[in-house]
Amino acid sequence: MTRMRDAPGVKITVPLADESGPAAENIWADPVTETTFRVRNVPTHAYDLSNEDTIEAHEADDGRLTFDHVVGRGGHSTYRLIPASGLDRSAFDERWAALADEGCSYESTTGGHRYAIDVPPHADIHAVYGLLEQGEDDGVWEFEEGHCGHKVD
Image (cartoon, rainbow, N blue to C red):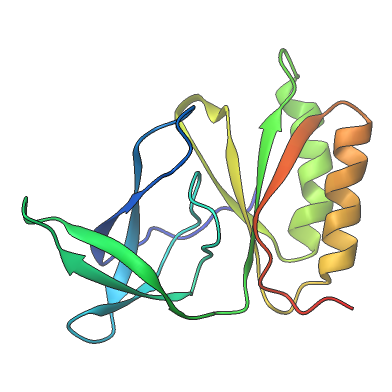
């Protein structure tokens, strides 16, 4: 099983617009300058944001760093998987192996109800997308795109 490394750095709050989920997500980032940071984990809820992106943040009234906008892309893509209800873990692991072979890693929410997938710049995005679609077609998971940072034809 491939997972993201422990993400050091500072915590940045990303406000979320989707009213059906949490109001905000906390991500980890490393300082680049006083107001810019490099994302060090895979967002599990925020859209248009990926691992290794450079972002700008400000200190909010409550003292927390709060996301403003992306200032540079790191070339990674983010997808999210929601395993099928009652899915045997071995079925997930079997499908995950092919994504890991493509260089993908993941972070999961508590209980493994949602997986945030990091697709690194060197991965074949078309092969990864095909594997994600096949897993969905076979009823193993549902998936969504959080951000595609790869150049696609």
